[in-house]
Each structure stands twice: as structure tokens, then as C-alpha cells.
Length: 136
Image (cartoon, rainbow, N blue to C red; front, top):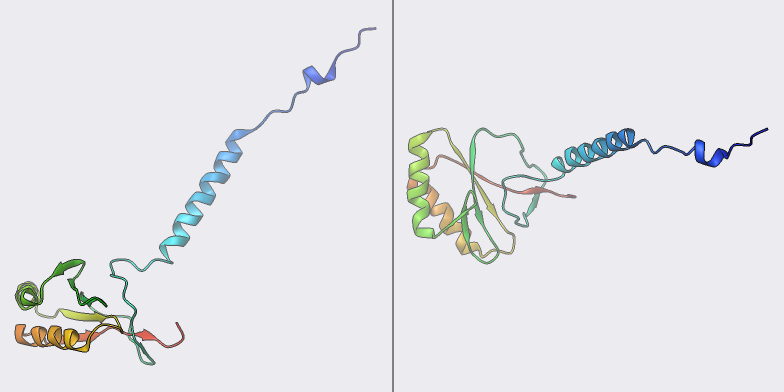
């Protein structure tokens, strides 16, 4: 009678295909979940809080005033003197444009008023000031 060595014949097989499927599933899950956590196309500013904040708006352009006093038209830093010209160019493209003024609550009040003045001089009719809901 011949005894066989069971250890050499029945080696466990590592099935890598199901493991790859699970890894891809987890990768897609985390990629999709992080998309909902990130606010896109904005400059990070600390917004003041209000109880009546709006979230749905037509096509808009964001103008940000940072704590350091920098003015950002969309995501491009521009000097105060060019704000009026840029607003006029955008208004020639589309008349019903909404300008959203995003200002850090630590920014100097004079800088925010100067940007508002430039928007008015350029003929902007629809200007919104971005705020954050209390409790967020």
C-alpha cells in the first residue's frame, strides 16, 4: 500500500480575481463618496453665517475677497482696478449674469465695499453675497 503525501497534492490556491474585484469596488466607492464631500470651483474662505442662505442660482461668477485682501475673479487673482473691466466683459457675454461676492469674515470691510462699488460701476444688476447657514 502506497501512502501519498496529502500536503503536496492539496495546496490551497489563492484566488486573486475576486480580490481584485473587491479592491476596485472599494476604490470606486471611496472616489464617489469623496466627490460629494468636496465643494468644487471655490476658493476657501470662512463665510459669515445667516439663517436664510440660498443655494440654487442661475449661471454665476464668483468674486472672492480673502482675509489678506486679495481679490479673486473666479480663481484668478486680479487687482481691484481690473474688477470693473472684467465684469463689463462678462456682462457683454451674458446680460442675466449673477455675481456672487464671497468674502472672508476676517477681511477688511473697506475691501469688500470697494469690490461692491466696482461691480456697481460696471453695471452689474444681480449681485449676491455668499453666506453660510448657522450651525454648519
